Image 1 (tube, rainbow, N blue to C red):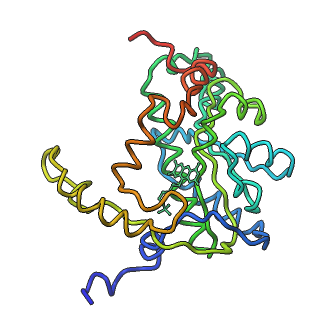
Image 2 (image 1 turned 90 degrees about the vertical axis):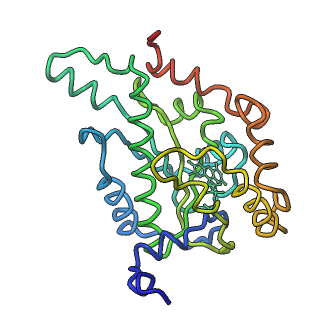
Length: 257
Ligand SMILES: Cc1cc2nc3c(=O)[nH]c(=O)nc-3n(C[C@H](O)[C@H](O)[C@H](O)COP(=O)(O)O)c2cc1C
């Protein structure tokens, strides 16, 4: 074994063994564990320390059922003991501006959407690693963006707050195999961007067929799967068509610049 691998610490081992969990036991998650997960998410770096993330936990079974349907009938939202929604949040920044007697205008700038989603992404990653290091399983739920307007209503989100992703957390009742990743050469480029990654993708197609045999959407190449998902501008059967409307409703992306 290589020296570096021997030195690999538990955090790295946890990250390298990551898999999304879609089947959960009914064993509850303790409040202490949830507290560690939320504090880990909060400890993530954020743009100008603006901490543009709010996490909402949903316990009520009827609301979970509704949210599961709205996210494309994803049963794990009901099954997992914890369901969190991660929001990009500029309401707090608006309040901060008001407290300083300044009008909040930055939502005109589309960059703010990058700021908010990056902050959510890092916080989500921290939460996942924290949960997995406690022996829990997770799966992010981007399917909430199938019904962003309904989620906003159910969560009572004010202007300048958008739902970005959900996260199911619980003890796994089934641990799936690792999902393979592209060859490193396809995603790590040195000095400049390398456009010709066809060979790496072809190699990955074969790995993907083998690895996904027997899975629900398995037995296909990665390129088939991606092309099929992205063939409509608003993805699978236009399933994500209300995101633009939702961004405008919440006060973003109004600038003509
Ligand atoms: C932002 C985000 C949203 C996701 N949304 C969903 C989802 O709605 N439903 C689901 O079952 N998996 C969802 N996933 C999980 C991915 O499908 C999964 O990470 C990917 O297939 C790789 O598998 P792995 O996590 O087991 O390695 C999401 C992942 C991310 C990062």
